[in-house]
Length: 98
Ligand SMILES: [Zn+2]
Image 1 (cartoon, protein in one colour):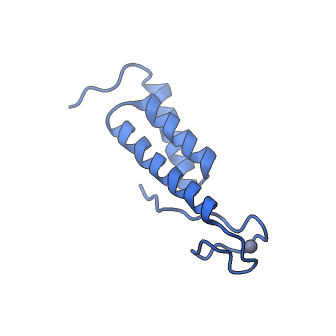
Image 2: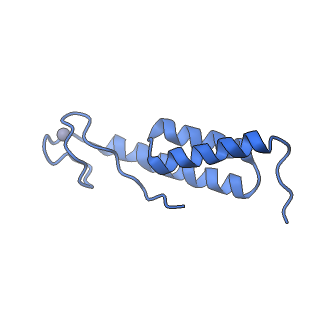
């Protein structure tokens, strides 16, 4: 699954498109906190995938949903849906390794 370190959608002050800098190119707002949130969400999605691979579906869902609350992305939404299905379809104990 593709999941780049998706950047914030834009400057929350002036709505300028994000250009990969910690400072808005239009209004000069400091976007560092926004970038840190996006990076934290990225790490939480990695943890969700790891939990899913290990069969811990509840932990995977919790991580995926927490990541979406921090920084919502299309890929993160898909991961949350997959984790939700995994929990609802297989609510029992974690999978045994094959
Ligand atoms: Zn701005």
